[in-house]
Length: 251
Length: 361
Image 1: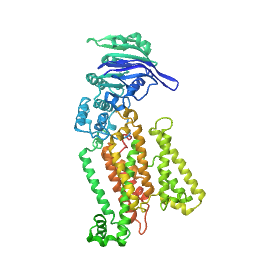
Image 2: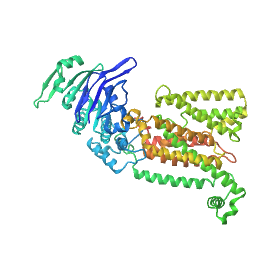
Image 3: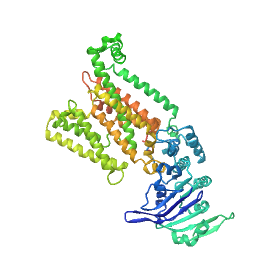
Image 4: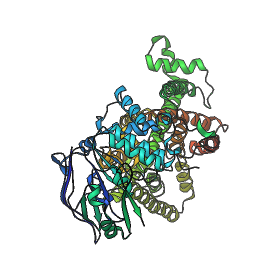
């Protein structure tokens, strides 16, 4: 399922955060959004996952416009792994993941065996089965993030939004999470800080700066020393390793 | 350290344990109702007590002797309605405590957090001190308290919804502000009336008391509380989502705005009736939810029914104690609940290392 935005604008007070953003993520494509802090990456994603409402512009999820979809329906099409998930109450890991089934449930419907099977399967995918009965609040930041990914997977959506999902993760789990997402075969749009991770996993990259799109294309096209200097004001060198994968070295 | 030693404690009990606990608590509640009517100042034998109950329930002709007289009146018109009222109030306070804690996402919330207690006190104070609302009949104090409770909670909900959607923080702040206003006016009314007897009556009323129980009131409050509890039980998924916050809930397909409003109104009505019948009984609504959470976690599918049953039994026994602990006198049940309940709660909290969920290290 494709995701498309057209001329999306949003302001907080007098500050315009998004100044007419148009992006298109094709079916089953893995698209990264890079850019400095405050460039509007998260704001754009929040518009897509409906936590923020754009002041103007359109967002399509598949063939329907987002604002005409009920939230239950959009949650069946699009799942989210966001940055912070802190809960003031104790839930077990299994309960947290089970909440991912909520958009598929009618008001009075009970959780059935199928739901529990999906939860189990998603926990296996993120390698958190052994933690299923642990209290969510006792997990480390990285473990919590994997549980949240499992919850998003339990939604069984054709689209996935990752809002800087690897922030709390060590390198092992950063790579693990990105590999899992990569193999899902769903449409993914992800805000990414680490340019090397972006280069390794994205089909295409959008570059944002000051609420505008400052570049778009494949990692090879976008991640050039010139663009990195223009966007981040740092000098960089792009090299290829023995397997032909690109790496960005900061000088 | 938590992960090493605390491993077992961090586990949440499974569904078999829930089924067992539910059954045990249900049996306990039935037992509590039947046992508690045998306690009281009047000396009535067990056989007489149950003969009266059996006569009233089944209208067996063989027991028709028990259909009237002092023993019948004490058991059927005083003790039994009182036990049922304790059941309702305990259940209502516990369930509404759970719901309020979910709505404002704060483990310190109790059923009175939206200013219901101070609103009810203001209503009661105006009735007692200034005689406002005497045309409501004999229980005009209760009626005024009910009106006060509903008016304050609805105004808190209204204030929190002004200028954008209500969220947890706005609800708590609005509740505190309205609380302060109502308490100030209550104090003002007590001060200008300068009536010591009245002041004592207000104080007694705010401590909570189940002695005014009657079948007429129970016919209203029992369906309201049990019905409300069942409604909230069906809403377990939304209540769970509330704890994750509005943003996460939207990504999980539920916009909680309307649900929150509906839950606030329903619980205000439930608590309003509890206040009308029994005044204010603190502590139950705060602590019963936490006790259940310590053992069964936060999933509202389990929390709501277990809190309802435990809260009901708890208040029944607290009321029994309040009736018999002083010779020939009664202690306000609210005082007793806090005196006995709070130390037990502290003990449990320390033993289970309960940190209200993730707050403790």
